[in-house]
Amino acid sequence: MDLSWYRTLNKPALNPPSEIFAPVWAVMYTLIFLSFSIFMFSKTNEDKRPAIIFFVIQLLLNFSWSPAFFYLHNITLSFIIIILLLIFIILTMISFYKISRISAYLLIPYLIWVSFAAYLNFSLMILN
Image (cartoon, helix red, strand yellow):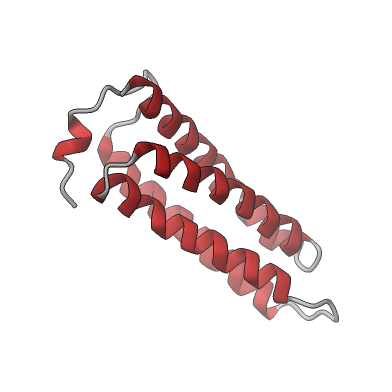
């Protein structure tokens, strides 16, 4: 990924160093995987399909943010994606909670991190 464009942007005061993002995302993806695995193996009579749909949508939104931001250099589109991502993380958490509370709780750091990323994205949109 070419970060030269990103380096030229005016950054908000709370912007962490670039080196922070990879390890944080490694932890987030681990928690996401654990959450989904626990959810899938939970015994229940509830229909899991709505939760799975929300989960897949949030994952697709998650994966679409980087190309929109880093390859298209479209900060506004990235912001729209991240707001939709937040909505679908919340919907996933609510759906998971009905079947496995621990699955929902494991997504709390992800929700917090993406909320912080939304703040950064919004700030970059305003500053640039």
